[in-house]
Length: 364
Length: 99
Image (cartoon, rainbow over all chains, first blue to last red; front, side, top):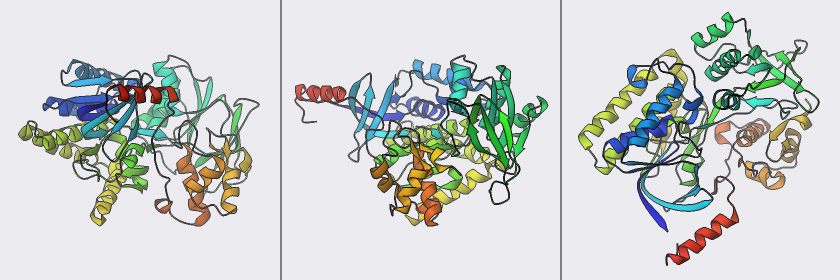
């Protein structure tokens, strides 16, 4: 039996929640699928306050933003939320298959918004599979969702926002943070997060990397070393740091495989951290009626993911003919907000990535 | 570097040494390497190792990442029991639809 769906939103993170609400507010009927048992995505474990403007919930903590959005979704009569539901496949004839409670479901959506987010990248060095080596996201889940102290003594790899924020949260949880190691010559994350760590006495070592990990059956320490201008390890600079946990925050990569399955054109764009679907200015892929929002179309902050969700949700409403005048106004407003969010010096990389997407689109 | 101790595909325990051996033997794509080693065929379906293997190919053949051929993405995105598939089939027969 195939179930007809008007708007299908895949992923209940910041982008998916905002997309579902925007489409439903305009009058469309939305089915929102979440793989986890609770919606909210990465917001559920973000205990720090957000930046941006009022519309992007500046000053509110990430998990509280998640709760607000989920409350709105649950109260909305036009939205059905299905948790523990994983999309298994998207087919070129438009059928979407889902695994929900060991049941195999088939859907036929009119419009689909993919908001599947991203996966953590992994690092290659000898003994990189020793127990005690985690992705930063896993450590944050253990701590902030599970209430488990993840380590006694940790080395963090990566001085982007995730590495800096998770390091600080580990300090708050009573973990000894030995140092933050960053291969780049400078700190990638916001200065405000880096400063908190430095004030707590945590060194941030730029142009350093993990040469190898060691331990008998579990991690007992890491050998760090310095990098030269060509990213080569400098012999003689090795430093042995005993620790029981190594935390990797070396970036995220978009989870675009569903777009790929559906036949949407995807390209590798370095600035967007991996293969991304080539979308138009309304976030529609090269497949008619298939949209993408959030990290799946390029790694950014949760704030931009929420705005992209709103943009895709209202664009779908316009395409379906719901509350067109207002929805179009919201589409334009979201586009302006994205320009604003990406305008600072931190937005340089994403602007370059988006320029490449536009160029690829032109080549067609 | 001890490439035999560097894990590229965690699901299937495939090391960098095994990937480099494949490249040396003449295998040129992620799909080739997948077929001979099972890298990318575990529960995570290549979500971790795909880019790492692409990086090894990019370095070995001197081609940019943009040009490394990606494998074909097919359903299902995660393992599903034969029981769930069989139930869905029975259900569709009851409903009278050929689907």
